[in-house]
Image 1 (cartoon, rainbow, N blue to C red):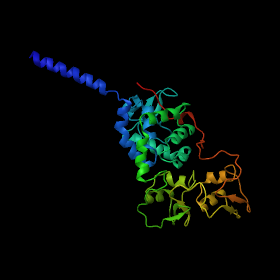
Image 2 (image 1 turned 60 degrees about the vertical axis):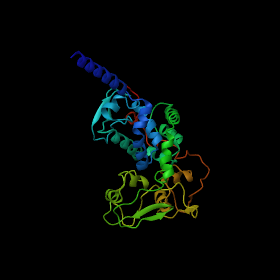
Image 3 (image 1 turned 90 degrees about the horizontal axis):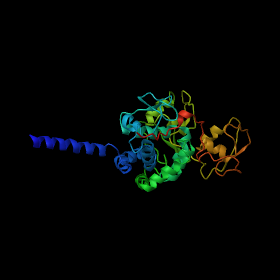
Image 4 (image 1 turned 90 degrees about the vertical axis):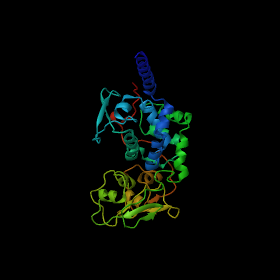
Length: 334
């Protein structure tokens, strides 16, 4: 009887010690646990695995924060007005702030990727090489992801200390897309012709098309087609014959198109669509403020910029004003 009691006490003590040691994840354990998930997200979304892992570890305290343990929230993403899922509350910039609560860690990783893809101020990041983790880290800080002045340096230090950039090579070497999305996602469930202009694929609108219906037909995410076509508020319908790009436009026109002579009725937007150039880049190339009205007989540059006095639009300047509830870093660790 005494022997059984001693064995039982030993097992309880052993299990208690094991549970205590297993209760807090180390940084190395965090990366080993979630590296495959980060690589899968990289291949799906174009966000470098090294960046995802470093942000997840930094903002969740290596998976040990209350948000991570109780809400599966590894990236400190707050609710915002468009969140309809479950919620968890935590003190951050203000007391008792609302954060997104996920069913699984996988949901948190996927939402993090989609969040970066859907916000206009992060769009320039996806023009970077997928192996440019330093550019991504600095761009995230510049675009307002976190308030810490050393946020970029912290991410870079983590990535280099744990050699996380090796996971980015899995995507670069596979040739799926070195930059998002230089190789577009495959068009599915459509019989309409897929055309190409300036090495950018597009389709033509048909009667009855809407952005919602075309998004379903092409297997895109809801924000992709409006973003690719420089439409912050897309119209309800698509005109027959309207050009709809199904991947991002380029930073300049093809080699055969150096300049454009503006005709009556043309706008900067219609010209950007005509040459498959990003609207922000067209303004930049011509040293014009966004929204500037152009007139007939003006000559616009399509490849080489005129003398610069405006900041480059693709170096991380936030394109939308940030407010307190759009700062997504949570470093509170229980």
